[in-house]
Image (cartoon, rainbow, N blue to C red):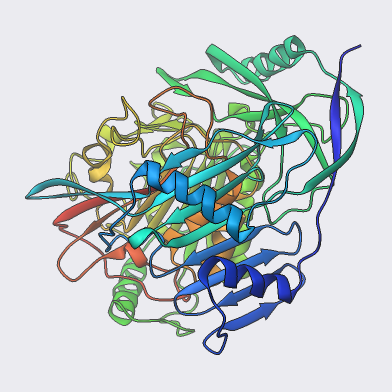
Length: 540
């Protein structure tokens, strides 16, 4: 019988001295008078207006950022060349002792180089600015890639070649034991049958073996092998890349199961419609919040609204339901009204277009997770079962009356797109010309520019960071970096590098890129009649 190894893992629970040591080695922080220290059961954190260093008590994982430099779209830094950055990264990480010492079956893989970047379109044309150089140090185990967010260390260099960010987690592996391997052919058959049972035809199926290492915010006692399953599915009349799913590769470990079907949605009419009062409340909020911090004031009783729409079991995705529920739970706990949480056959495309004033555009913050590509994302009938870029308008305000015309500020698409671009990978097209019509007052469109992994954590993690006061852009980028691997092994335009991005529009005096969630910081006015379109990406 064929077997595969299961590794026991451990880590040393970090203490305050470890936090201070990391801050000194990475950012040369020795004077702590301007810093605030936070210690609780989940983390240790040292923060100031410009810097943040955090250690997870669940894993020992590190997140560190020069907040004045990392993901700052206003900068035009002087950066080292790619080769210089690689050489400097090796030297710096070795001399600073910021990489773990790998032993046994764990080794370092081939370094990946990438740059955060922003592209902007104005009347003067399209321009691109590189914001940093990022060097990814990936861990491999027994020659296999590591997925799950816990196997990469990424160092970012900014202006003048100075370190401006570092994140990563690795739990030391010890002794191992063997478990009976499940045949690859058996997993392939189960995967196809799951999709076929939901009426999803596959035109291609892919499979590879990897080890699963959890994100830094999760505890993990065993490192175990998984089969990563993907391919192409047919949804309506479209072929769409499948969000990658993980299946246990042995008899050991968590068993995969798809959630039960959702109760049938019986009405096309929303229990709550956006009214003139809602529009008035939004107008008053704008006047209060334009570029100013909002800390606790409420214009009307509890005016903030969230919603979620997702494709789970009907698309062979085991994580989507909990992923969306985590987003909903966080905002409900924050006192927001929850307008909707529609899944699978209830996630109607009509909520996004014909009836958007009742559903998607009646909420401030909407989270989608499911299957997508550069051209749109899958939904359920009525209508044709997917939302495509050519259905949202040819430009901002044309045809108008879609996202942001009524209430929607921020939209997340946690799937395999739709922010691909030729700048990232051949065949990615032009994201600005595809999705500019989505902005009828919408502030931010957050998503990916590559094929990504199904998971249960994006919605909860994004909302939790936003509730801490992080900008939505920073909260989304950190969420993606902690949960998704930096590489997916896929071909262009959907890989091999995994990109996370945010698209936005501006007009004179109005720039929403540094928006916070309502009641957690400043929010820009609605960027109607915009004069520029931009998209920023960083590597996961």
